[in-house]
Length: 253
Ligand SMILES: C[S@@+](CC[C@H](N)C(=O)[O-])C[C@H]1O[C@@H](n2cnc3c(N)ncnc32)[C@H](O)[C@@H]1O
Image (cartoon, rainbow, N blue to C red; front, side, top):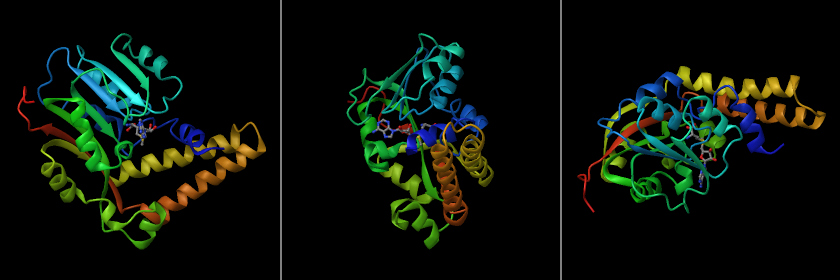
C-alpha cells in the first residue's frame, strides 16, 4: 500500500489535514478583516478542501479555486453537496508551476509550505497570486517545546528547520507580512488528529481491507505512525495558523 492511499484512509474522519478543529477553521475564516463583496480565494495545497469550503460558506458572495497536485476523489461532490456549485473550482496542478487566474483577495496555504520549498519560499511565492493589501492564511509547523532527540529523529528534521511561535512571527514580519488573528493548535487538537489518523487506518485494516496484504500494510503504517507520534513529536511539534496581512498598500505594484 502506498502512503497516499493510506493517508486518504487515515483522513476519512478528519478531512482537515492538519491538527486543527473544525470550529477553529470556521472561526479563522471569519477573522480575515474586511473582505470585499465578490472576493476571490485561492487555496494552495487544498487537500480535502475544507478550509476553502468553510471560507466560501463564511463569505457568501466569494468564489474560490483550490489547487492540489493530487485532488482527492469526491471533492466536487462534497462542494456540490454544500451548495457551492459555480463558486468553487478544483484544479489538479503543482502549485509551484501553476500560473493562476489573476490576483486574488485571500490566499490559503495550510500545511502545504513544502509545496514551495518551505516557509520562506511560500511567503515569496504567494505574492504572485495575492492582490496588494490582501490576506494570507498560513498554517505551518512550529516547536511548542524545544525538540527532543527522539522528536527530531522521528520527524527527520533538525532543530533549526522550524521556528517556535515567536520565531514564526518574526520571520513573517521580516518578509513584509503583519500577523493578525491566528490559532495555535492545542495538545487536544493534536491528539484528536493523530488518534483519528491512526484510528481510521487501524479500523480499515482490521475490518475493511480487501486483501491480507493491504491489512498488513495498513496496520504497519498505522503502528509506526502512532509510535513516531507518541515516542517522537507529541508535546514538541506544534502548529500555528496565522492570518497574515499584506502590508503593501492596496494598488501597490
Ligand atoms: C498536509 S496537506 C494539507 C491540506 C489542506 N490544506 C488542509 O489543511 O486540510 C498538504 C497538501 O499539500 C498538497 N501538496 C504538496 N505539494 C504540493 C504541490 N507542489 N502542489 C500542489 N499541492 C501540493 C498535498 O497533496 C496535500 O494535499
